[in-house]
Length: 324
Length: 162
Image 1: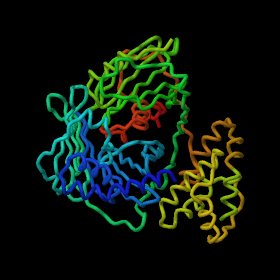
Image 2 (image 1 turned 180 degrees about the horizontal axis):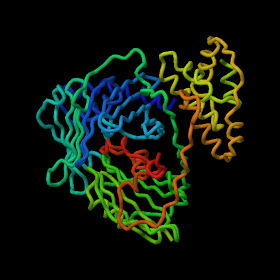
Image 3 (image 1 turned 90 degrees about the horizontal axis):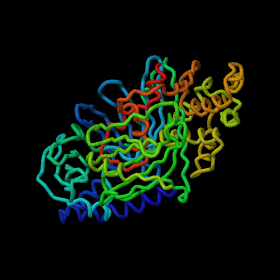
C-alpha cells in the first residue's frame, strides 16, 4: 500500500517534470526523468554489460502494471542460460546446474536501466552535471549527460538518455584517467504495449528438478547496540544504514554499514574472526568500478566494497573503529 | 480445489505431488497474481500470513470458480520427511522451498546440502569468497554500477557442487 501511494505521488511528479525537462534542457531534470522512465515505461531489448574483461549480454522485458507494480524478466544470453524474474526488488533467479535448476530468491535494489538515483542534495553537492552532444545508441538518439565528481573520491559517470522517452540508453563509469572501467548499453530497445503478462514466467525445463536455495533472514540491530563507527569518513559520504544481518554462509550475524554520496554506495561488513577455524584472507581486488578491500581490525574481518576508487575504499576501511 | 489449497496451507498436502494446483492458479494470464500467490503461500507456510490487499480473498474467489479435482490423498511432505529421517528444520526449509516453485516435478526434490565448514584458508583472497557479501551489498545498498549482480553466485553453490 505504501508503495502504491509512493507510486501515485511519483506519477503526479512525473507529468510536469517530463514537460519541463524537454523544454528547458535542464540536465538535472533529464536525469530525474530518466530515473522515472526506467520504472514507469514498458520496454524490451538487449543490453550489453562490460566490466573489465567480463562482457555479457542480457535480454530484458520490463512492464509496469500500475498498482500491481513493476515486473521484469531478464535472460542472460551468454554462457549459462540464467533467467531472472523480478517484481520490484524481489528477484528469483533460475540457473540450470546438471540435472537440476537452482532457484535462488534475492532482493536487488537497482538494475539497468533503473540505476539512476533520485535528485538529492547529496548528489548535487558531490557531482556537477553537464550536457553533452547526442550519439546514436542501439538505434536511438541519445543525449549525453555527464556527472563529474567534485573530487577524486568518486568516479565520473556518463549517461546517454533517449530524448523522447527519457530512457537511459547507456551508462559508462570512468576513472580519473578518463578510462572507461565499466559500461552498460542497450544494443536493441523498443517500447512495448503489454495487455497481458503471459511473458512473465521462466522457461520451464521439464524433466529437471527445481531446487530452491534457503532464504536469508534479516535482523535489524537496535541503534544503541552499534558497536562500530567509521571515523574520518571521506567528504560527501553519509551513513544510510547500520544493521546486524545474517549473511548466507556466515555463522553469526554480520555488522553491515552502508555509506552513500547520492550516487555511489560503499558497504562495510564486519565479522568476528572465528578462532581456530580460519585465518582471514586479507587483500584487495577490483571488478569493473567496484573496489574491494579486506583487512583485520581488533580481531574482526572488515570487508569494504563499493563503486568508488580504491583510495576511497581504503580511507573508509582505515576509519573503522570498534566502540569499546 | 479450494479444499486442496486449504489442505496445503494446513501442511496436509504434498504440493510437489499436486503440480496442477499451482499451475491452475497460474492459468489465468495474470502473472502478478500468480507471483503474489507464490509469496502468499510461502508466508502462510512460515506462519507470517497477513491478509494483504485482498489477495487472499481474490485467490479464494478464483478457486470458487474452479472445478473440484478428485484425487487420492497423497502422503504429506511431513510424512515423507519423517519416513526419510530428515530433521524437522530441514522439513520446514523444504516446505518453503517446494511450495513456491517445485510444482513441475513429481519427485526427487533434493535439498541443497549444507556447505562444508571452511577449512584452513589460503592466504590469497579470491573474489568468489566474497560473493555473499557482494550479494548483500546489492541487496541493501543503492548501487549504480555492477550489473553483473545477476551473475554473482552464492558461494554455497560452488561448495555444494552438483
